[in-house]
Length: 111
Length: 113
Image 1 (cartoon, rainbow over the protein chains, first blue to last red):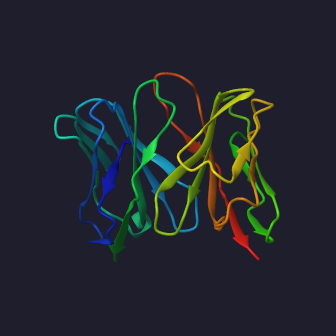
Image 2 (image 1 turned 60 degrees about the vertical axis):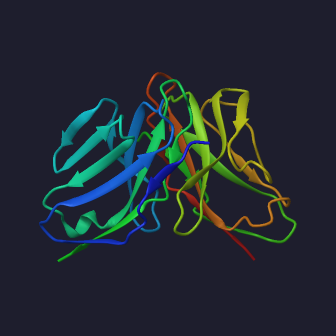
């Protein structure tokens, strides 16, 4: 049984600062990693995907993957109040149609 | 307007009643999924389907049933055997292939009367 672990938070970050979200996973053969953002009462929306070790940047978001240590992180630079949400980490294998989700980290950006 | 449509947005179930949640997609995706989310929890997989007329149980399939008669549609029935059905139900779809990027509908919130 794959496990995906996230700190549930809440994580409070001042506006304009960097928010750092972490996720660890148990299955060493995991190959694809995703970060979803979920606003309260809404459905998850994909914000980042990463497949190779290292960093991947998209605007204010950077995903970092370290397969040897089995963790993936999400950095949000210049945090805005609109970034306040729950962030879900999800993991799958190549060719595996199932995603395993973590329980999510609730992020609050303080104006 | 492409996307995944779930209906209804809110649904109430009486004791002993079966209810069906609708999920339709026009993204031409091969695979479709149903998840359940409880407050403060992550998503748990109920059923998934990779092709028409075929589906597999997820981690919490007991008390649920699905069908996949058309590529666009993947309805979920919450049966009376599901004793704790109150939750947020999410449908997702993805293209088959090497990378599984799933996109979600807006969800259905089910409550018990």
